[in-house]
Length: 396
Length: 75
Image (cartoon, rainbow over all chains, first blue to last red):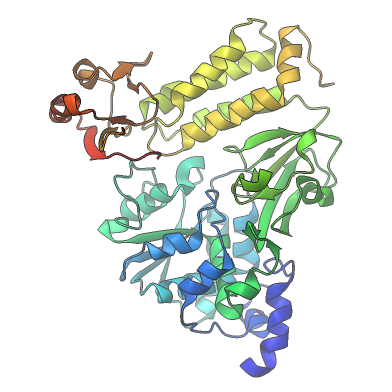
């Protein structure tokens, strides 16, 4: 069977799309397209060769994280997707659950891990449980439903969910790979990252990484929303321009795009030709968890940024003083700019408050919020000036 | 020269009592009373003459929010 499946395997795993291929979620279809999961020797080396980076937001080189793991550890597939505008993990868990499970099993096998967990949003629980029941090799995987909150997807929050049932970010004294769930070496990988590992386990790192650009190999899922006719999830190779990524969603005339989600950065329409990549190297805009929010030229970016800042302030886990106090203060200042408060000190006060919360929390929630707000002041500098003069450029 | 250890603030424990800010000159307080590291962030690099004060801050923090860690260039 494996000998006859080789040409099909190439078609099923090496093109674009390779994750969103459109076949059904059943195990039978999965096996017909890809064949069984091979026990590949040297998977960690193959992942290193592939250049795969984490698809959960931080874009950390996957092989570096794997190399830090001790044997008999814990591997956690993270599909909790706390970002309200991210849809890719749920789509993947509904449409390709077996590829995610393959990636989790292959990773755990390569690391000689003892415990396997899959943390998913409530909407994905049933499809994932159904997929696990379809196969005989996945009994070790324990499924847990993540609470629907923004900071719940952070790695230490996922570990805390499994340890205590609360799901709150923790102060990390050491890396989770050193000491994580119940003191064990713990790997937390986004489910899209695991799906890519499911492909690498079959075709090897080099062939997997043939698509994309040297600094950003393979493909990535993007969740596209905002002022577009067709919101949804697309898959694109590394090195894609922002313009090419949003084009299939038929955007309104673009004023700006929030790249990377609520902890991402606003860029103006002058950035549409830039690539969206794993990191800011080579002039790319960091993709984060692949969220693109399009702002049409009839929307006020400051209003949108203020609404997001207010949402993020409300989503603080309530543990860290600077976040609990600073984020509402920051959101209030941005809201005053958006409301047309003409106090000339306001922009400087926003900057100061962003700087005051940055780096002062157990997780990156204050940092990400500050980053989004700061980028709004830059991308919407003309709007700030207009609001200060008593008018708004958006025809609302 | 960079310090080899740092005083780390666990923000999930800190309640802004301010004991540490009285012991260490490198710590101010923000408008809500929480310690403010001069260079920002959660870690105050400990200079040689601050070693004792940092140990005292760890011992005296009423909510056990402080620890001494190897200094890291960034988080």
